[in-house]
Image 1 (cartoon, one colour):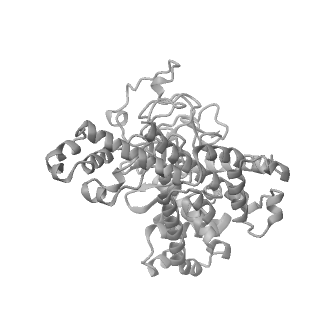
Image 2 (cartoon, rainbow, N blue to C red):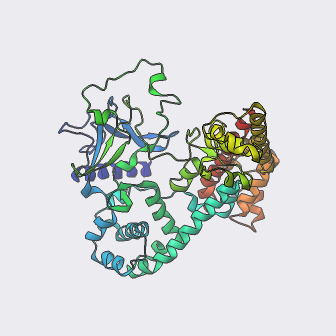
Image 3 (tube, rainbow, N blue to C red):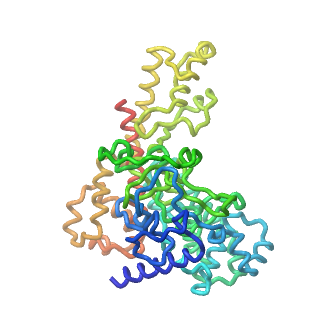
Length: 481
């Protein structure tokens, strides 16, 4: 209870601090919403901080009915944390940056963030720093066990690449952090992972810095995939509750806005707009861009159960890649198990005898069937490839479902006899999980004692299993097509 009261007090202080910087959810001088808990506050007219346990945790809810295209939050340039703004206030940091020109813009911002954390309460940004998450589940932070739990080669490679890149960037930046005399704990790889994950998951684009900016209050928005406009699992127009709002009075630019937010030079602020109509108390979501679940894991540390932009890549014959002009990233199976336009096009051409490819190429590239026989061959080959992939992965869809159910109960299991009730695959993977943290502690496994370090990585294990389960479901859907 004391922690919750402390968090509430920190949030109230932060929102007051943000208000003093000119951050506001009102386009006029309208007073905060009468139901606003935090006064004075930068929120209350259009948005309020709320908690959504099943949809991203803490986020922003509509304080009233919001219209599509309406300006709902404005963050002045002076309130954006960028490398530029941090160096203006810290000459030592600025000098270090000039003496190490080989560092990337992202490394510079990561170092600058750790430098501010090092200042503690004396940092001008302290109220904002107190609001940042204490940990992230981005791919770079996955341990070897969680990486292997992804099972699929492409995902394992992506995780290993992310971890290797993070370690290399940390090593390159170590000399600068030492020159800044950061506390030893802030010079560790663990601290670097936290800071770089903060940059990766929370920065927003600005035209003057490739690393982007950290945007107080603006980074409270949770994510919505751009291809859908959630209302539960439906679009607003199909919710069936009769709710409707007009967009009269809005400028055409706002009504037809294609992005949720961006820095606007004419007002000198980062401006956020309602992507659609929202009811009061409904969570207001922000679209960061089109990402697959693996990309969401890599950059943000979460994935979506129903991501319209997700896809599954399957191994193809080498000559398929050389035969077609489509980039590899367009050859995939989509969220519903359907082969992409490019994959079908490439496969139809590949399944055609070489001496006939020139004459039917225009059909393949226009998305048309070449012949019934060709189509049967193509769909059969893709289905067989998906079937082989499923059989070659260590666990089945049903086993992954059981495992996810069991992982959620781990902290409630204490007696060895209960271990025997788990399916064998769950028991095997649980043992591997515990041994990855305490390799020689057999007693810990027999008594299902979960070390603190292991408990912190359970969320990453869950994400790995959820990702591979989603991948397998797409393959299964493709087979059933």
